[in-house]
Amino acid sequence: MATVKQWPVGERPREKLAEMGVTALSDAELLAILLGTGVRGKDVVTYARDLMAEYDGIGGLLAAPAENLLQQQGMGPARVMQLQVVMEISRRYLAWQLRRDDGFTQPSMVRDYLTSQLRHQQREVFVVLLLDSQHRLLKYVELFHGTINAAPVYPREIIKLVMQFNAAAVILAHNHPSGVAEPSQADQRVTERLKKALSMIDVALLDHFVIGSGQPVSFAERGLL
Image (cartoon, rainbow, N blue to C red; front, side, top):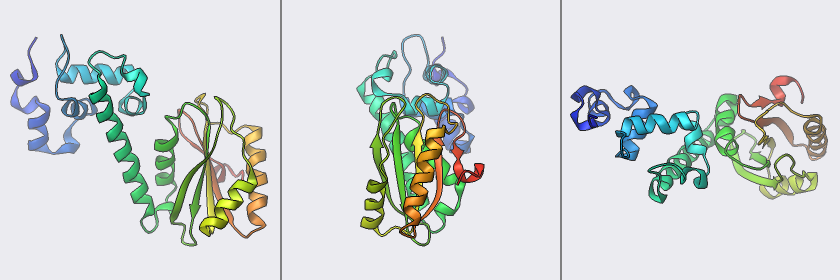
């Protein structure tokens, strides 16, 4: 089996990056550069492709639990930490983008940010995004944690946070670890209760996102607010 070094120069990931730029690389080629070397019987690009196939793409690989990754051939603690660092950098970059000027007026960016924060969670997490009067992010708070399918939500805790940070508006979000993002009747009841509680202190509830394995669901887009 030929190694990557024996491939034509234009097909080697690093040389391709230098010549054509990072956007010209496939997901497997990007991952191959990060990993550096393959494993016994596989060059690094083939190894990268196999890993992504195992985890349904680069996103699934980056979001996979460390204990799961460590069971894969060639995946030691150092490589797992590399992947965790890449994932965290991407989350922080999205957060930085959203803190700039009009970030939270762009639903697609909010959706991407919440997906990066919540899709990998193994239990249900209820999140509050506290915004100022210009809809800029003041604070991201993972407020309630639940079991595989439930998280207790207490309006008084959300009101306390709003008052603490002097927020003018709120976006809510939670994940469905089962993978199905469709809002339940319980989700709708909780949202209505929180909307009423926030309106009493003149704070707007802008949206509530449900994050699953597919496209996140927006209560505002569904007309549920």
